[in-house]
Length: 153
Image (tube, rainbow, N blue to C red; front, side, top):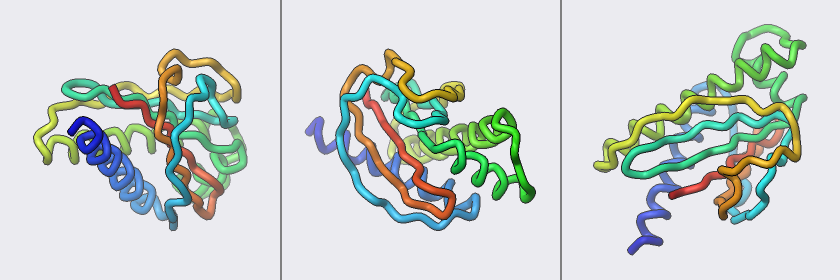
């Protein structure tokens, strides 16, 4: 039963993320779903966000620097060269994904709220929230690969 609940929740994370990315104008396809135990950030730009309440989850959305700038350029409809502006712009996507997850979880009767979004602009940073097993979802988009690493508690 516990595994079925977690699979249903992972589906909420995937569909919420896909909807938000599509709303920002991205064309995407799910590349693969895996499990990882890497306790470190694996991308140059990492947006950390999540939910808490009846279910707690931390999500790390990872992108390359180039992908971050391309995504910010798409969102702001003009060239973005400054990495701080690009990172802050992409962090808005993390907030929107968390909000969509909360909305979709509440529709199935799970009471949660979003947690604050943080940008970690370095690869290899050890995060305590990444110490457990995570589901990793890789999306291939026109701005490059966008990866989600999801912990469920």
